[in-house]
Length: 216
Image (cartoon, rainbow, N blue to C red; front, top):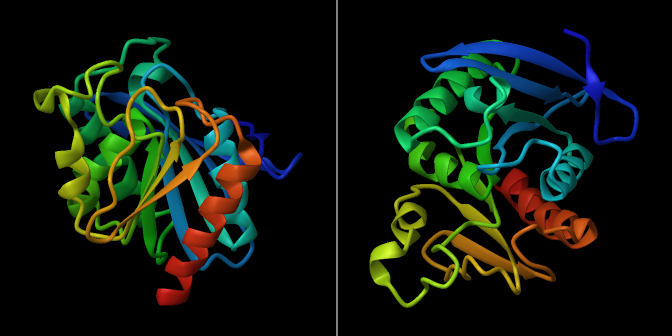
């Protein structure tokens, strides 16, 4: 397939169609010349890979010589806005990462993550995909207005991640503010759940990613 415009302002991404147990996923691969690692990011429940925070994180990673793959889940590729069940999202994600490891990102240490729902998927699958770190952009800790109901909390998904984790969260995010934890860094940036402050997202992601690369 033809490439799409890349975050570096004109560089084309290589677009791949990969089979999963729940249909075709689409991967926008932003390569760097001499990658030191790879970062695979998923989109939010109703959005796509052009979200401002995903673009900002991609730019930050590329500047550190990290190749980035932005993954569109099969339901989005099929033109649906309503997300698939969690088990289907996780299975499709796991299948995509396995194929990327075997081919396009072969030999690279792999970090996974995503925006909102995509971050939840990365958390739930971190162990099985062999990710060395997880990046969550606007993690939806609880539904808006339900922060006082512990049964609605998704903190357990973050707590279960076995590798270093970054949460980049808007100061006024109605989905809540996750606490820091063992191996988990929470960086607060101006904005709400949309995380449209690209400069703040890029700066925060860059510092944390650089530390991960230095620790490899």
